[in-house]
Image (tube, rainbow, N blue to C red; front, side, top):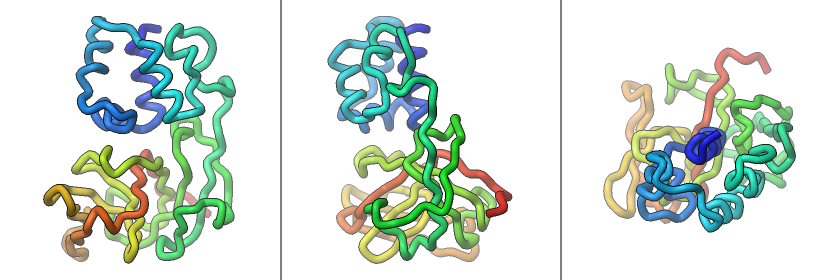
Length: 204
C-alpha cells in the first residue's frame, strides 16, 4: 500500500475529503497532501504525528511504514453509541447521556455517535426515524454544502451549511418547501458534527 493509499484510507475512515481533512489537522492548504498523492513526497514523521495526535486511534507507525494495522487496536472497530433522544435534549458532554444501543458498523466506525433523526426537514436525503452517524469537526473545517449536526445556544438541528460571511452561516433544509432557511452566528455554535452516513428504514 502506497503512502497515498494509506493516507486516503485514513481520510475515508474519518469521513473527510482531502480539503476538510487538511483543515482538521491544521494545514492552511491541502497542497501538501496532494503532493503525497502525486508521489512527490512520502508521509513525514511530523505529518504522521500530527494526524495521530488529532485522531488517537490511528496508528502512527502504520502511517509511516505501512506495517501493522491502521487502528491502534488492530482490526477491531469501536462500537458507536446510539442516542435515541430528541435534539433539543442533546448535550455536547456525551457522558451525561446514556446510549440506547451500541452499533458495530465497520464502514462507519470513525463516527463519534449516532442519533435518530426526527422530522422531515432533510427528507428525502435523511428521512424521519433514520439513524444518522456523525463525527465532530472544528468550525474552521466545515465544508459549505455538506450536511452537519449543529449544536448551538438556541437550537440543535441537522442541515446543509452554507456560508454568508466570516461570522454567519445559513442552515438550509433539503425540504425547503416546508422549512425556512436559518441564519446563525458562528459564535453561537457550541459544536459541529459532520454527517458521515445514514441508515434508513431501521426499526428501533
